[in-house]
Length: 203
Image 1: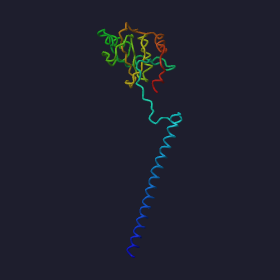
Image 2 (image 1 turned 45 degrees about the vertical axis):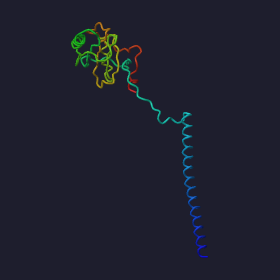
Image 3 (image 1 turned 135 degrees about the horizontal axis):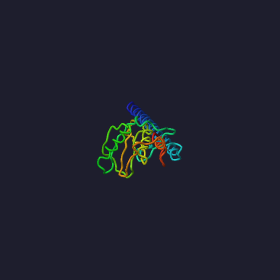
Image 4 (image 1 turned 30 degrees about the vertical axis):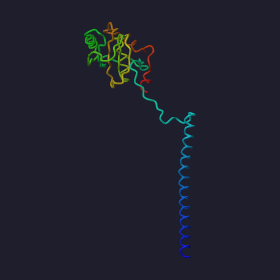
C-alpha cells in the first residue's frame, strides 16, 4: 500500500516537473520568437523609410572626388596684381626644346621674380603655351604672371601648399613678355573664359 502510494507520488512529481519544463520551454520560445518578430518589424519599417527616401541609406556616402588640375581657376573678385618681386616661382619645361626652362627663368629673374627652381616637367605633356599651377593662396600671384605669359591658364594644384607659383612651358610656347606695362598687368587679372570660381576648389 505504501509502495503504491509512493509510486503515485513519484508519478505526480514527475508529471509536475514535465509540465513545469514544458511551460518554461514555451516561455523561452515565446520570448525568442517575439524578439525575432519585433526585430523584423523594425527592419521592415526602416526598409520602408529608406526605400521611400525619408531615411538616408546608412552606407550611402559620397566619395571625395580627385581634384581636377585641368580645371582653370578664376581670379579672386576685386584682386589687383601684386608686385612681381614678391612672387616666388618654379619654371618647368614640358616641351622638347632643350634649355627652355633656364632661359625663361633668367627672363623672370630679370623682371624681379624670385625663381627657386628650374627642371623638366614630370607630368603629362600638353599642347598649350603655358600652364601656371598654384595653391588657393597663390592665385593672385599666378594671375599676375599672366602679364608675362598672356596665353597662360591658371590651375589649382592640391599638392602645392604655399604661395609658390609653378610655370610650366608647353609645346605651344613661343615667347614671353619681358617687361609688361601697367595696362598689361591690369589686363592679366581678368578672368579666363570658362574659369571655375576659387570657392569650388575649396569645397
